[in-house]
Amino acid sequence: MILDSIFLIQLIITVLFSVIAAIYDVKYGIVPDKLNYILLVFGIVSNLILSIISSNVKFILASFISMIITYTITFMLWKLKMWGGGDVKLFTAIATVIPSGLNIGFLNIFPELSIYPFSFSVLINSILVSFPFLVVFISYLILKKGIFKNNIDFLVNIFNINSLKYIINSTLNKRILVKDLKEGNIINNYYFNNEDIIRLVEQVDGNLKVYENVENDGFKYYFKSLSAGGITKEDMYMLKILNAQSFISDEISIKITFPFTPAIFLGLLIAVFYGDIMMIFAKNLFLVI
Image (cartoon, rainbow, N blue to C red; front, side):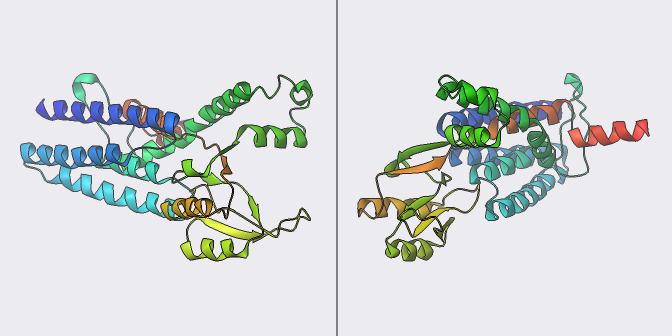
């Protein structure tokens, strides 16, 4: 019974921290490192307590193994510039608290478990449920910016390629002050002629790359973020220095990123109460066949 109580505390804390992370991500576009680190430490301590009470090392051992595996794989995704650092840390923290799923008898929670760490079930669930969030997110941006208000033709011809390009460019990009740049911001094409900028960008070796501009519009070069990972801290400081020295203008265009943390939260709830969506699908498919 005491083990179930600790499991319940782990669940409540993990869900609570995931909710806070989702709120921060939606409101500020970033998940605080402190939040993730506190959850990770809680995971280690709570599983250590479980091992001591049960005289079984499996809890703390599973916590460390799950933490290392999850961090290694998600860190590789971050290095490939496919993911944000906050998501990596949040998944690692969840993996540390709940390494292999929960079976809380008095709550009748017996989810469909998978053969891989629990955090991967959360990841898979999050990806699968993120598509409705993405549709709602883009629809909200379209309504907020009034794309169709004065451009009814775009609504009529919404599946026209030019209309789609206009909608994407109008909703998923915005201009901000360089001084307000944050780590993870995805920089759109910034055009320039000063070749000193090329040298400075290449020295940083971050997530910005310079390209030659083939358009005959008066600019020789442009730089942009290499991938969805966004700019690094070094990139951010370099751009702010370039702005302070008047190498680049005060404003820069960035992509409006989709906050993935709410999908992580929903993926966590599904994993806890129902299990791994892929395992459930595979099981039902096997029974049908």
